[in-house]
Image (cartoon, rainbow, N blue to C red; front, side, top):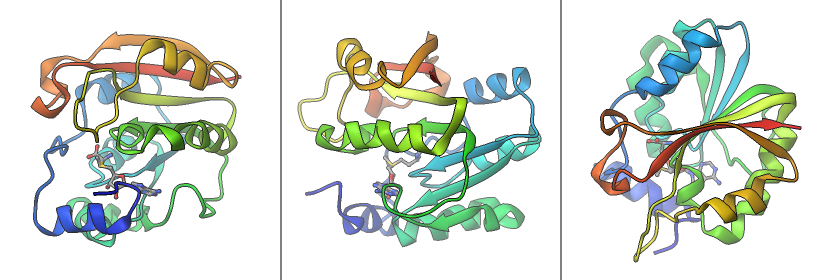
Length: 194
Ligand SMILES: C[S@@+](CC[C@H](N)C(=O)[O-])C[C@H]1O[C@@H](n2cnc3c(N)ncnc32)[C@H](O)[C@@H]1O
């Protein structure tokens, strides 16, 4: 069971075993976008079903959603209908997305990656953002005896992001934006690129 393998995710989407799927964009993202309307450009890495693309579009943003699992991309294109062209089959770490972006969105992508990949994630996000751009979304701070999901803790997050980012927003995620898999241990955070 290796969550860095495309097949790990592809099999789960094809079998409809997706306990991480929120079935819509979190209300915290909608509130954030009300305060920060577009035009602006967002990247949604590890997008899964890609619901957030519609929320960005409705707020006047342009969003590019990427996932390396073909079944996730098929699902997102179905979910998004006319916005399906915003979804690409791509590897977050190695493919070229153009950019730079004003915002990189996070939900359950970082915690799906083994911690050995986290420094590369932080560097890649920093590279994809404009100076002053933000890494925004939901981060998992719970405990997990059998990861994935791989949990963060505040000290680890500080060490991971601090050299490149400043934490500008941090609040609890309400139950309506969370799922049993994450045990109410998620935070909505805004990390601004220095
Ligand atoms: C737990 S799912 C989360 C999906 C979505 N963010 C959500 O909130 O429902 C993790 C996703 O990351 C994708 N993924 C993992 N590694 C990836 C990589 N290197 N490049 C692109 N996508 C990746 C998987 O295919 C999977 O769809």
